[in-house]
Length: 198
Image 1 (spheres, helix red, strand yellow):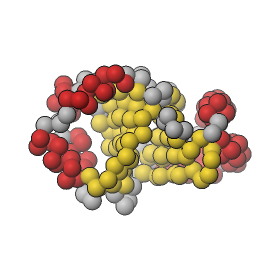
Image 2 (cartoon, rainbow, N blue to C red):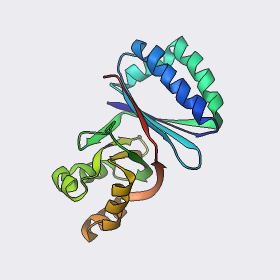
Image 3 (cartoon, rainbow, N blue to C red):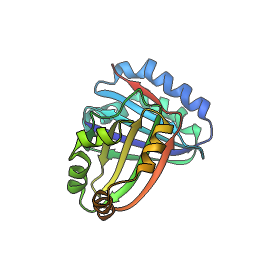
C-alpha cells in the first residue's frame, strides 16, 4: 500500500467537501489503484487527507491525468497558502487498518530515529491493545524516508477515545514510546469523512 498525506489550512470547507464529492463521483472511476481516504478539518482550520493507493505508481498515474490537474486547480483555491504532500511507500496496518465507521480520528505526526523498531512496537501485541483499548477500530502508520511518520487512528467515538487516554500507558510501554519518538503533534478530526473504492 502507498499513502499520501495532504495537509493545508482551509478557508472554505464547504467548497472543499463539494469538490471532494465531485472527485469520487467523476474522477475516481478513472483512477485504478485508488483505495480510499480519510479526511477531516481541525478546529483551527487545518485540513488533513490520508489517501490510500495500491502503489506509488498508481498514485503517480492518477496525478498525471489532465482531469486530475484541472480538478486540483479548483481545489487549491480552498486553501490559504501552500499545501503539503507527504508520500509514503512504507505503510503498516494496525488492527486491520483504518475504519470508515469511525466517529473520531486522531492524526499523529512525528519523527523517529528507528522506524523499524517503531513499527515493531506498534504491531507487537494487537490482541492486548484491542483488549485494553476496544474503542480503537484500527490505524495506519505511514513512514517517510527521513523517519517522519503519520499515524492515523480511528476511534469509535471521541468520548471513548478520551476515556481511553486517561488510562495512560503501562510504565514500560510509556518509556519505550518516549525513547522511540523524537517529536510529535496531534491533529484531532472531530467530524471525519471517508471515501472508498469499494
